[in-house]
Amino acid sequence: MGTNFQEEYKRKLVTPDEAVKVVKSGDWVEYGTFTGQVVELDKALARRKDELYDVKIRGMGRVGTPEVVLVDPENEHFSFHTSHMGASERALADKNLCWYLPILYHELPGYYRKHIKTNVVFLTVAPMDKWGYFNFGPQVSHAMAGCETTSTIILEVNPNVSQVLGGFQEAIHISKVDKIVEANWVQPQIPSIAPNDVDTKIANLIMERLQDGDCVQLGIGGMPNMVGKLIAQSDLKDLGIHTEMFVDSFVDMIENGQVTGARKNIDKYKVVCTFALGSKITYDYITNNPQIAFYPVDYTNDPFVISQNDNVVAINNCVEVDLTGQVCSESAGHRMISGTGGQWDFTYGAYRSKGGRAFICMSSAYTKKGSLVSRIKSTLTPGAVVTSPRTMVHYLVTEYGIVELKGRTLWERAEAVISIAHPDFRDQLVKEAEEIGVWRRSNKR
Image 1: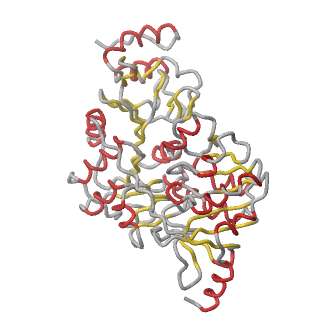
Image 2: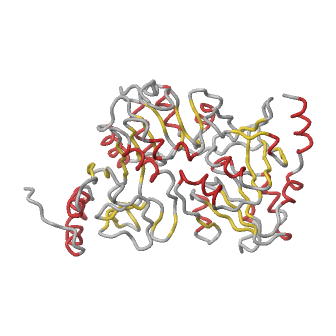
Image 3: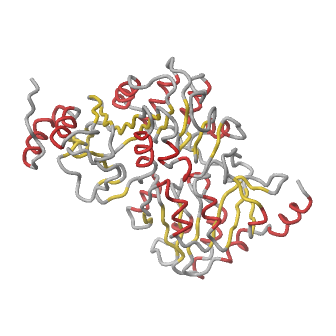
């Protein structure tokens, strides 16, 4: 490590309590994303509660509850905001302690550069290398965009952060940093969501549509995880990966030989992603792995970049669908439970890809208070967010089948969607389709 960089590091190294003195009442403070959101700086800022008012904090998919929220349940001193709700943020939102920022994920870096005000950026990073760079770790996402548009950058340096390779914009130089604090917490591990029987049925239906050379994106959830497991057990070959999120099942696919990236048109032989969530298996695997390239999200999720590869397969979950094909994937009525994430980006990008297929999946029904509830509805639940408009949806999948909605009229869509609804609800859905004027009895026999 260069002597000058070492000296600069020592000059900028302060305690967390000293670092957070730069935050003023009314400021917007960036906390980072996913498993890389700051911990020691959060605790130090919380200790300043009585000195500060209306400090607005922005994160994304945080694992665990921020200390600033715990010490200020009235939201007078701190308010927490997110552009993708994980489990802890969902629980906070239910108490009006977390506020949602709607995004198209591939546009998020542009929001910082054009629209979003940030006074102070807190970021977790890996230790400085000999060239004076700090790696952002497995949450490259929009980190550099936030750094470019703030007045103060404070790094929380943690030796446990997995150092990842780019790509580009995966690291920041010490010359651009104002203050440094040191930490030693372990990256939170996110266990894979165990697939259920319905997930397995859906995954098997999708497997029938996969072929050698496909370029795969998997969303979060038990069903995409099951697809990854089935791919790892299959005889598919020469698959590519261009995804938003790197998860445990990708490790199995790569190590079992299904993934070579040899048929990709761009980033040939590389596994492309913008962040990683998983167990220690994932974090160990991505560390300094030259096969895996982390890029900012305005590259990985740009539909026009995605579509440059042939045979892109996008596999994502949703909450509910109406009879015309409108998809809600992020709310239960007015209650936000997730976010747009990369579904819009990859659904559009995969369809634009030569030979591409975009699958949006769900169980046909779920049980609530002992009663079965259909996920297919004549109209979406009041307040439900349309994540993917009906004009965008390519394939819709439940455990009862796969239907293609592109190029279909409203009555053809209604007929197709009802055909994969839970059998207990099909007759009622036909009646409702008639009532809203999207049913025409076809000549099928």
